[in-house]
Length: 521
Image 1: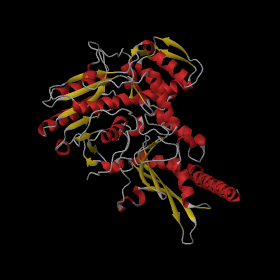
Image 2: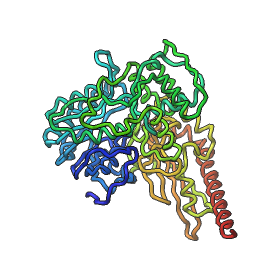
Image 3: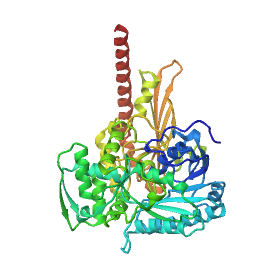
């Protein structure tokens, strides 16, 4: 059902574009970085929005959820996609695997063809796709070639299509921005590959969103790709040095060398930044080429704002402001890690006994339930996990080395969580205010794992912290893994119980002291 409550103000785009006029816009990839930001922009422009997600329940904490129609559909399911596109005026195709493997490219092609056929069958008014900017006539990486192919597949359909081609997108939480930010902040001096001298035309995320929304109003005879970029053409070295200046950092010293391949560079990025090498490699491979807009024809249909497009320094300043204010609405980690488990915790009793290992602990906490909840909801990221930091750090390093996310993803918000948020190597699977936080592991494991954190009350009204670690092993390797880590549970999970209790009780005492001081005053 649609909610007729007025849409909230757009989060990242300060300029109105067009008028949706109640037209129906379908958005795929709503759990991703761009899709999650596009929805409120479309609502603010007057569109009705249908959000398509493989797991609709993962969207329920989004601030815009009551204003959209949510449809559960897998993009590879032709019947489901066709049903989702019924009655749609403009469809946004924001599906793309962040990988450079041939298998992902084949999947991208199949999914794009499925979508194009369904859009044709349902007589969708326009398809809009956000792809990558690439040079003509050069050999492209598997990742960039896949993005090019997807755009061509959509353009080859009878449905009028707009393909927007962007290079580096600058915005709080984007993978490109986070990679640049952490490289610059953590390395005052660095050896970099020669591609840091290639020219790039970055674009602010708010201008990307503006073009996406404005593309819905293009005339029916417009069926083409457009290069989109900001006003500045810079080298990656210029961007790092410019970031350092905006962030108030000392001058960065960079020595370009010729021996670092994209593969080696992506491993280095994976070590230094939160962005894992599997995501870093496609980003690095796209920078091997110079990616500068060859035209600005988009302005004929979506005019530039009166004050112009956002420049590099302004975009960096705005992104840092969002980060400092903890107002990052989506991050690169909003989308799940390729290959990570996505199965929710089953309630099937057949999982009992030997098929599901459980480490369960309960502690009485001398603090009000809401205080304990705030401690639990703030877990992970910079605050850590309240137990043996060295063990968590070592496990994170092992996970990164084996292709997992490790601990460096951090959190989108330092205090508040939503279902679907990434928290280090966990994903928020369930959240019930003041009561339950369930995290599903996305680390590399021979099985499936969850961490269940609950706030409860005993019969006499005391606050209880109940903690369960659950593990469903896969084969003998899973059984051996549980047996190997069990001796450390008292240190890790027992320590978490004790330290969370201390943190909640200390917070309660601080609140009581503050309340007492207020009364005295």
